[in-house]
Amino acid sequence: MKKLISILLVVLFILLSGCNRTANIPAFYGEFCDAQRTSYRDVNGLKETPSKVAWKHDDLSEAYEALLLTTNAPTIEGNRAYLVSGGVITVVDLETGKEIWRKDYYTGPSPLGVPPDYKSDFSSAFFNSPVIYGDKIVILGGFSREFLLVIDKNTGEPIWKSEVIGGDSTGPSSQHLLIISGRIYLAATNVEGYKKNGEAEAGIWVWDVNTGKVLNKIFLEPIAEPIVGKYRSMWPAYASLAADGPNIYGATRFTNDSTYRTYIFCYDTSRKKFTWFAPIEEGDVDYPGQIIRIAVNENFVAVCMVGDQWMGKEPQFLIKVFDKTSHRPLWQNISKTVKKLNAVLSIGMFAVHDDKLYTILFDKRFVCFDMKTGKEVWSFKDKDWQSEWWNKWNGYEDCFLEHDVVVTKDVVYFNVGNAIYAIDPVSGKLLWRKVVEKSNLFINIMPIENGLIVRYQDIQIGYDTPQNPITCECWKGN
Image (tube, rainbow, N blue to C red; front, top):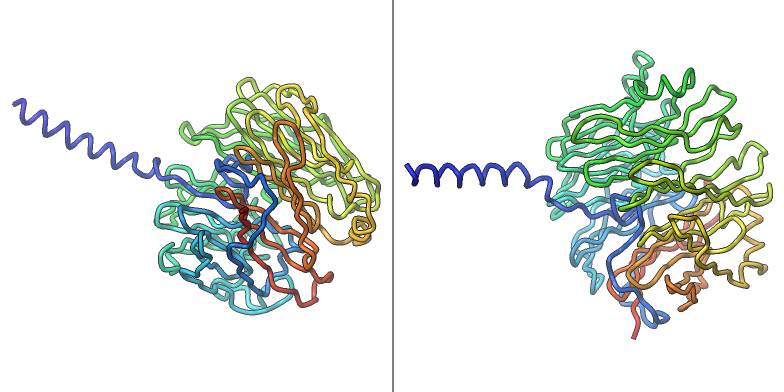
């Protein structure tokens, strides 16, 4: 009898282990470094000015990445770097840069990466970092007809591809996919369904990562309508998602076509219920601001938004921080610029670590905030930000340029135009600055142990202008 009980216990343990195996698989993100969108990398930073390029990779694609606010920084997993450019995924050895495999999923040139035939397979470019989950690559493709694509990470062969989940008629997806316990979560819409009956089914869609089966669609309307009233959702285009364990935190906008309301929410995937829904801005506002980032750590939830830049209003950059447990708003910071766009700062990013928030404001300062109080711990400003080079960039009113902010154990990195800065996160002291003369924009930054992978491009202004190659370099110290 005892032997039988022992065997049953072993079998039960194996079964339970199998049930939890999916939940325990780590996911590796490149887009904002982690699922929580904190832009933190748990590596030692590069404290000295990079003195050598360990390897270099050039890629020319049909995608007009820089003009479409790319967020496809390399994804790092083990000794591999997964690089995305246009419709091409290239996997390289992290130390040597040697190509492991490369596959082109793009099927035809056209302006802005929009294919002439929307129905052609893998018909457009990737504008986001891949997520590595077990033996799979999960990536969002398409502009302006979006789809999810899951690929075998060892061979590059497609495993499954979703239906069209975002487009011109319904708006693009949130683009920030999450993977929790073997399930993919993404704010998306049913484009084909919208064409047939006018129902976009905008919500958080849930796919099985192995099969591609749609498991659920989580809608905001049941919780939003009693609070928001007769405002229609601008979901999912005006949305951002982050995950902390089983909880998904998000932000989105609603409109009555004349004014706008912005809300933050939390959805518990284990209990399948919303646990938080509250306004970010007080009352109605008359500009359709873009929600750029939401991030969550152990104690706080932070969101940043860029105010209207097209409707003749004064552009503004808003940061707001909430207590994670009580959901109480703690503080906000609003910085503004002149009506003529400061192109280099037109899109803001931030990084969060150790209850500090690092960002660059519209008043042209890089600032470290205490996340509990909102007080400035330190700020940094470079004299070159007032130079002719800066003014040259400000002349491109229709060019949207974003900057990256990433924090490691001991270095905070950010870029402005063609310069990358390394700052001591405690003192705010400049450690080094490096300029790439043949580039006019750093697209994104990805720290590695005692090194840095950067992607940049010499942009040719104009949507139908042929673009120069995107260069990816691995920087090291002595």
